[in-house]
Length: 205
Ligand code: PRP
Image (cartoon, rainbow, N blue to C red; front, top):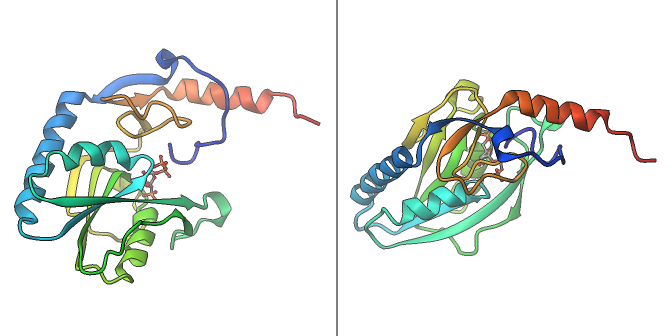
């Protein structure tokens, strides 16, 4: 999960973390099929490469790829964002694992679980465009455009969401719950208590 990731370390029960289901697995499956059909039509006869942004985008990509009925290749990229006071409107990120293969001339779709401020994808677009691909489009399962900072055009969108924190289907809370097949709201009271518990722990000397 974006800003709280890696800052907390207590263990919580699943029932303490998961709130109501926002998108059940059936709705996600239907949406993934719909997006797969659109991409199949749009990319027929082209050299399609799906690029997944680790880690959250992987679950969506593996399902989406199986709903696309044309030949395609997949590749993975991992980036780390600098949050907090060092983050600015240009999105300062670095690549921690690059793509394996050249993308020159290929028709790319970057596959994301969620686009929030858009800073991550904006950085990626700038970086990948400099490698001379044939074309680049974006496919995101969730679009949280209420927090958008970067000016980006998203061709394929699954669902639009608000500011609520979400987990499941690739989205994590402290790196867990990515494997849930539905998307849940996170119980904010639990998260707040979790933060308080950490803050009240005695400092190691
Ligand atoms: C999430 C998501 C995007 C990014 C979007 O990744 O998968 O890559 O945040 O946020 P932005 O639009 O504000 O840049 P996260 O940093 O949580 O890492 P993860 O994929 O490993 O969960």
